[in-house]
Length: 221
Image (tube, rainbow, N blue to C red; front, side, top):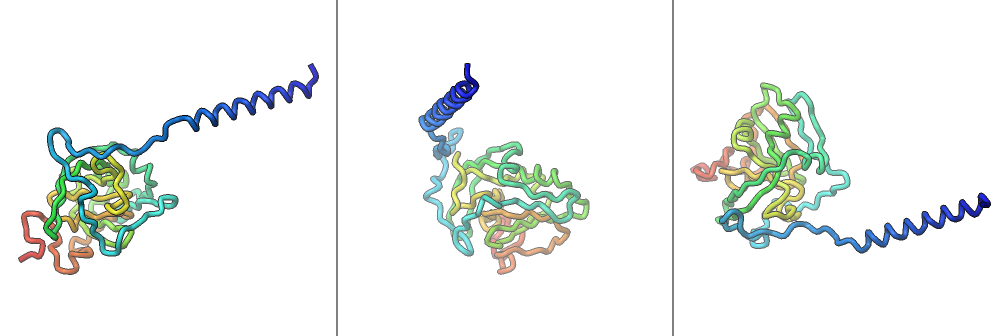
C-alpha cells in the first residue's frame, strides 16, 4: 500500500478517536460539590446559610491560582503548602459548635486536617510555645502550641459536607473548639510558631481575653 495512503488512514483514525473521546467527555455528568447535610449521627446541624457573616474587612476571595499556606517560624522545616497538598493529609470529621460574642451559635459538621499533623511536618523547635494564625485580611489570633496538639484541632475545608464558601472562610477555617468565635480564624494563609507567649491578635489587642476560653467572659471581667 502506498505510504501516503497509510499515513492518511492513520491520521483519519486519530481524528475519529479524538472526536469520540471529546464526545464521551461532553456526555459525562459534571461532578458537583456534596449536598449540605442537616443531621449527623442523630445530631441536628445548623444550616450554613443561616449563619451570620462576620469579618473585619468583608469576605475575602482568595486567589487559588497562587495560594499557599505558609507554615513557618521556630521550625526545622518551613513549608509552603498548596491547597491540594494540605488536603492530601488525613481527613477528620467532628461536630463542633461555634459560639460568637454577638450572641449566636452554630453547630456544624467540620471536615479538615489536624493542625498537629501540619506542625509535625515542619518539626517545631523546643522553644516554640505559641502558634500565630494569619488570615488573608491580616486578621490574626494565637494559641499555646499544646492546645493545638492536645485537642485535635482541625483546619477545616468543609462544613456540613460542602466546601466552605468564601464568606465563611474558604480555603481554610480554624475549628477552635472550646473558644469564643473570634478565635475561629477564617481565610487562613499563615501558621507561625513563635516563643512570644504574650502575642495578642486583632480582637485580643482590643480588649478581648487572649485565651478566648468559652468558660470565661470574653472581656475578662
